[in-house]
Amino acid sequence: MMAEAFLQKMDRSLEVFSAGLHPDEHTDPMAIQVMKEVGIDISLKTPKSYTDFEGITFDYLITLCDGTKDKITSVNIQANHKIHLGFADPKKANCPKDQIPDVYRDIRDEIRNELDYFYSRILESESLRK
Picture 1 (spheres, rainbow, N blue to C red):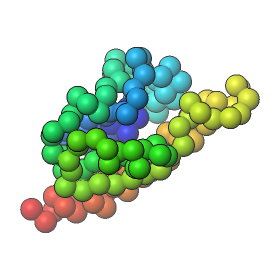
Picture 2 (picture 1 turned 90 degrees about the vertical axis):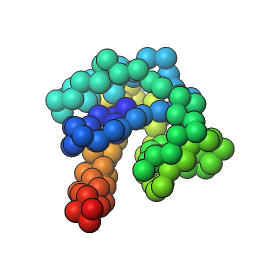
Picture 3 (picture 1 turned 120 degrees about the vertical axis):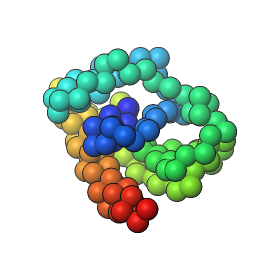
């Protein structure tokens, strides 16, 4: 959901969807907290399953978590372009509890940086060619 929120903030005209292979029932409270720190509220977002989007063809399919790239081939989601950004899952961080917010912040910032590059180098240049 962090990626979805960042892309929507970059360009409100984009249609962006977030889904997981094994989504949680509720939005991760730590993700909500670290996104609020950068002025984005994801507290009302609900995790969705990839099955909600099966059979749809997207312009871009961006997978984020380590391991997702290998598993995504077994689902029926088509895309004109597929990009994998292999971020660690912050929920699986093996560190002291007081360091968990920093792990989330680091991953949040990595996601933002990669998507900023994606948006400015790929999406904007693509729209200039049209």
